[in-house]
Length: 312
Image (cartoon, rainbow, N blue to C red; front, side):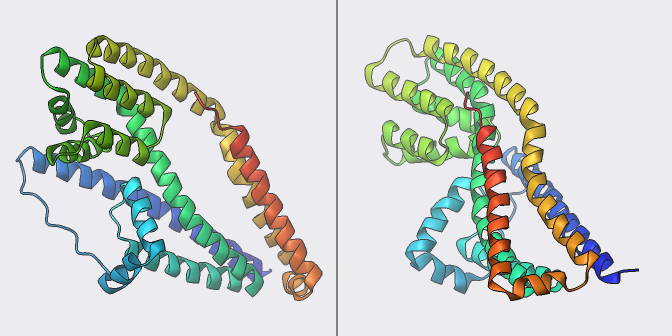
């Protein structure tokens, strides 16, 4: 019995279960935090104390750098409750774990590749979280436009309607509109506040809403009818987007399965002859072949994602 192959399979399974467990834990914590915030806003429980920030010294050093300032802006658009210092420490820790685990299962050369993939994955996670938050906001746009239309029809000012929508909607729309309402309260113009919102959560639907509100604020006009027509359009687009996502779900799974198959082939090769990967990565040709193969697998996953990206 080849115990090295069994150990490699067990390590891979443990990594997969760890990722799934972290995802479930993060989703549960987010739901718990949202529930606590709603109960605190309703006055049923006292407001929770602020979370103690970790790695304060590292966070201060990271924020002073230009890259740290860009990282802070990126994290702000994702809605994650994490500081730039915490994100940096977690990324470095994940990099080291990936290097040592993959290096122990395969070779040190593959550990370096895993470390590079981890750095890319940390950045890609911020982009994914930003897109996920944007998608959630888009899903709330029909309800948002309905609230704004009802409030303006009742004679309320647009700024008051935005503050009312911030109180009634859940996150992410509630927190984003609360930011807009706070900016308006301290003297920012509606154009600047809404444009900043569109920059934080870029999407066609939000751009249309922002343009409608800005034009109505500047020139007046039938804002109620415009918002009601926009509500109907957003409802139709929401249903269409849901159908498209369902149709393309199988293809998106293929994009994930392609690199996983490559990793499985490496395990099979190493199981067929012990030390095969060590022999392959000792030579320059072998290292070049590994890099080219990894690049081709990444290119395949990227092309599949690009082909299945349907803009509605």
